[in-house]
Amino acid sequence: MMRAVPTLDLVPVSPPLAGPAAAVAYLLAVARAAGVRLSRAKLAGLLYLVDLRAAEEGILCGSGVEWRASRQGPCSRALAEVEHGLSEAGVIQVEDRADPFTGCTEGVVHLIDAPQMVIDTALSEVVDAVLAEHGRWSAGQLHEFALQTAPMREAITRGLPDARLDLSGGPPLPDLGTGLDRLRAWARHNPLPEDEPGSVDGLVEESRQLTEHRAEATRHLLEE
Image (cartoon, rainbow, N blue to C red; front, side):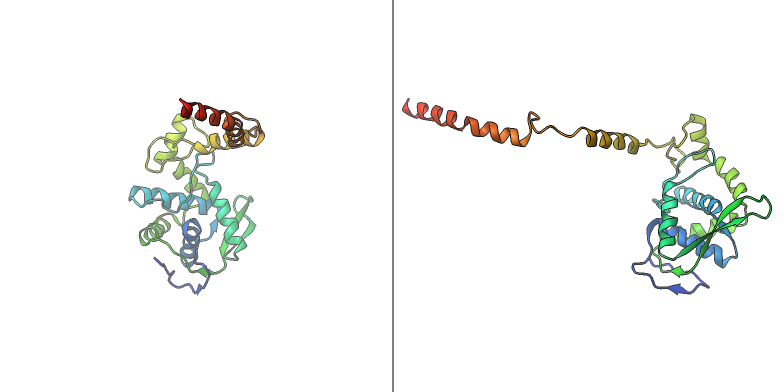
């Protein structure tokens, strides 16, 4: 359903944002309305907690982002793609800024406009709740908290770096993508030979060569 963000002017976008882009945009919109500044690391930490709580409450898919284990905590390659897409669409702007306490440079994500978005009501309520509880936490606090969650503990215990996290708390999910990528790469470098037995062209040629023999055999049968 269409979810409007209170206190923010909606800017028409065609089509409305959906899926992970809508979840990220909604989180940024609610954070801006609450006066909470989000860096890349903090955005990722909050979105992970959103997906974790969504899984606990039986909300299928959550934000739609896939999470993996790393030494830095749960991470998502898809989140970088979402950020790039929103930036290209002019929805967000990422500003590199030095942290006043640590001196380290961090990417601060600014929501330029509040676009129309399609987001499940139950998921939006989870976003609201997570931001209310953890929105004032630092990126470091979110990182330490995420490391203590069941999916991350399971991956760490099993010693599986870069494992796909099962947010329901089960063991890391099998990663089929790597095997399929290797198979596709092998197929690209090992094309099927033109004279490969069993190929369609070979069957056609074999059938053509046997046409006369089949006709001769048929004549003998009819004469008998």
